[in-house]
Image (tube, rainbow, N blue to C red; front, top):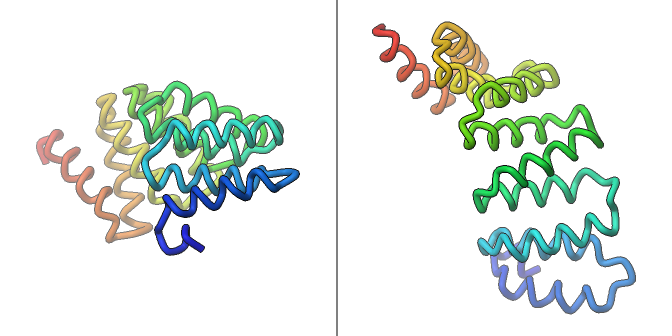
Length: 177
């Protein structure tokens, strides 16, 4: 109940008590990890998600969660490793491709970011976020035509998507339009 009210410190205390009572505390570790994320304690969130991975090593969800925690603390290499594991378990996980693409983008590996966003678009052909991210990555490698095409496509799906509008303007200014 505390987590729903945004009182994550009290929620963490309750989750810790429940973990001691549970025979299989994976769900509670996940909930406590989520509360740690909300409090910005990524180290403890990662520790809890790692405990879930030990219980369910073939489940994609704990790797996804831990990948998000690694990403949030700026550890993009470990985030990429976890998202890659998610993709090996679930090859059609658009979320894992998208998140891994964002991690590659943060590392300035725009070619891999483009490849991952292309996979998202394969799975969800109307993904405004993926078209926007891929278009921005194209811009960063100097492929302005592909950037304009993707950003324009994003805006054809959602004309109010602010990031696509802003990035399209940046690309057009760089092109001298």
